[in-house]
Amino acid sequence: MKPLGGYLELQNEKGLDFYPDMLRLNTARNAFEYILKIRKYRSIFLPYFTCQVLMEPIRKLGISYQFYTINEHLDPVLDFELEPGACFLYTNYFGIKQDTVIGLSKKFKALIIDNSQAFFSEPIAGLDTFYSCRKFFGVPDGAYLYTECPTRLKLERDVSFDRFAHLIKSIDLGIEQGYANFQENEKKLSNNPIRRMSLLTERLLTGVDYKECRYRRNANFMYLHDFLLDYNDYVFDASFVNGPMSYPLLTTSTELRQKLLEKRIYVATYWPNVLEWTTPKMYENYLTRHLLALPIDHRYNHSDMKRMLNALKQLL
Image 1 (cartoon, rainbow, N blue to C red):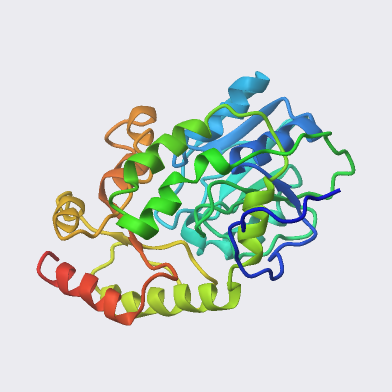
Image 2: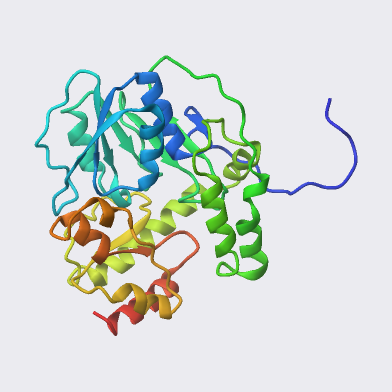
């Protein structure tokens, strides 16, 4: 029986989930672990060019692993074969590699798709696919998992109120003042057990205007692309962008990231751990040092993109 009266709780508009039929979990890495558990994979091939947090479930479950390389199109170099009990993970980089995902789906059955950077890319029937909510929206955690495997794990529900400080502080004091809390939250998400998505995160996600978020990401992406196409060493087809995570700009410069930082334009590095996993001669190593994932999310409009372009014009 719920209580009546008392103080008023945090209020947000209730709408619909974007993926109402998927499993709702606490983190993307745990969604990955969920797949490994229910499929009972014994080994996995994963890209050198990926986040180190994916190693958490692999090590936790004692699964053997091998890295594979990607080419200049960010497509996998398929110089290996899958043995029984093995699987293959591919990342939908920046949310613009859906064509590669479709192609791989026709070649592999034991395929896992990491859509952490591709929230709006719908899953392909039969392919285990996981998503990260906090990489796209202002939530403390949360992940979706698409799988047709009938096996289900019994899970407790997660609690997220103690991971909320950076989101609240960003409203009152600005995004920069909340960065230390954001880093603390990242640490709290490490090595957590698989749990169901918290009620707080579920509630927040029902208040997102997904149509507007996707439109704004597409518009900002194409605004940048129209200018940066001739400067970008990474060549890709932008005809069918679908709410991408960021704009990937690849140049020979190693100074652009710091120069943008000085202008309060923050560009994350994907991913520092790759420098430890690879040699300087490997393409993944080069990508980590030279590729800039420019922010294009729904917080920004064409005026913001113009400011970023003006900064880049002075540096390219």
